[in-house]
Amino acid sequence: MPDFRSAGTKLAVALVLASVAYGVTRAPFLLLVPGEVFSLPVPMVWELLTYGFIATEPMTVIFGALVLVSVGGALEAAWGSRRLLRFALGMTAVVGAVVAAAFAPLEVTRGAGFEGAWVMGISLWVAFGLYVGRGQTNFWGIPCTGHQLAMIGAAFPILTALMKHAILPMAPQLLAIFLTWAYMRGANPRLLWLRVQSWWLQRQAKTRSRHLRVISPERNTPRDSDRYLH
Image (cartoon, rainbow, N blue to C red; front, side, top):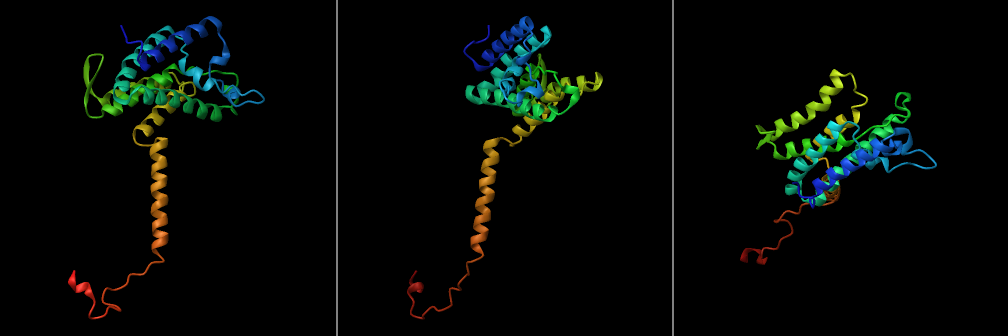
């Protein structure tokens, strides 16, 4: 039995409960509807998070919950619960915000809702694979490196988009793969802010150094100076 105190298991339980609730009620405000997220006068910003726990197919619910428990648990052991939750929820919300802003003007997506259980799942999957890197792990008992595991996870939405000609419906998952790769390569807000600060300090140092002049040690130095005593 999974440890229900872990963050990964809690995310999996939330996914199952939210998906069942959507399956029973068919409440559209649980999905990500691009035209509603930033609409006025009542923006439905909660959809940026709720859609990440919705799956409409039973297999997606079960497989997504297993990924959150297994891969989420492994990342939690390496990162800690807080960082895991920040990444899982933050990545889901960022992907939702980009998709909502990009697709809201499009007529083909007007009124259509995106489910995002696999957005969160694929983000954790790829992140764990890139975290392991060249180290050894396994895919259902098959030995592989972390990079290979990340490629296997990314292959699911990529092949679905290509073989079913469903690039638009798979856009959130494809974007999640790219943003996760960027995050694991250092493009996270904290590191980006540190790099901006480092660049600014270097720029300030160069600007101030232009007003400085090097004075020769032989210039204006009396012969009886005590510099020879040191």
